[in-house]
Image (tube, rainbow, N blue to C red):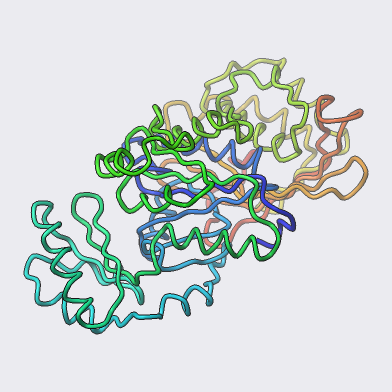
Length: 426
């Protein structure tokens, strides 16, 4: 949060399951496309917010399973928990607000009288959320009767039904929509409301997000009937809400383009990087672009062409050094030369690379320091190293390209590669 001192150019607020994350996409391509677009074009001046029904336990589990980025803000447990940054620091003001007219003990007491309700796992029970499963055919009747019982007990609650089976009971002031409204009010008080906000969802518990005034909204192509029905009844005439043609994260990219919120071509959608010249590309874009090229090289998806090697060498300072996470230092030219030997070595295998938390900092008139977490998936193994790259701007700007001066990598604790260092190239 502290890295952005002015108003965010764009704030994306996205649900996770079946919105940002496509569980029917084993290669995670739409998510990887979004990751590359965000880190190359938006991370430096925009905010990424994940808004999920998942508890912190299940949210962390999803992050271990999928190539997800680190959001600036995480809204969890259907809008009852707000945390900031990689350390997930809780928002104490939000906790105080939710405590009003809420008594968890009364909720559990009253719900125990409903045999139709099946309590969800202990990890899904949170201080301001009590969660059940309920049969679709009985949901509406149960919700009506339960609401009446809790009101008689003096509680002001909200009951949310989603996914055709999940029933969540929250304080009336909670929910994905209220959590977003709270954040927007907070940013406005600080004098830096986002220039544009795009909300993204697929199910009933996302409907509140689309009710917030002055936001753009996308119901992804695979949105459930319950959300489409809500839209038909409540927001059909709103031109700022669309039903995307594309599924999940691809639908989010589609919406960025539809509403003209900024660049919407992911570096992963560029076939030939040698032909890709962007006038306002930041140094982070250069680094994202290289690692996608490197992934394709290892997967044998591009030709083993001397032109590519020559172009990479031309982008390296003659004295440039690469320090691997194993602590081995080599001339960068030698590393580029060594790429010939690993062309296609991951062909047909599960091998992907993505960058997270790309941050470019100017340290001179034409010199930048780009820091990021470089993730590598190889089969069932996942590795990560904190990568710091010093690069110079050639000529008068980004169109003239960049010169790589230094690359240093250090393992992120818990994600070290144990194999022989000879297999590590970049």
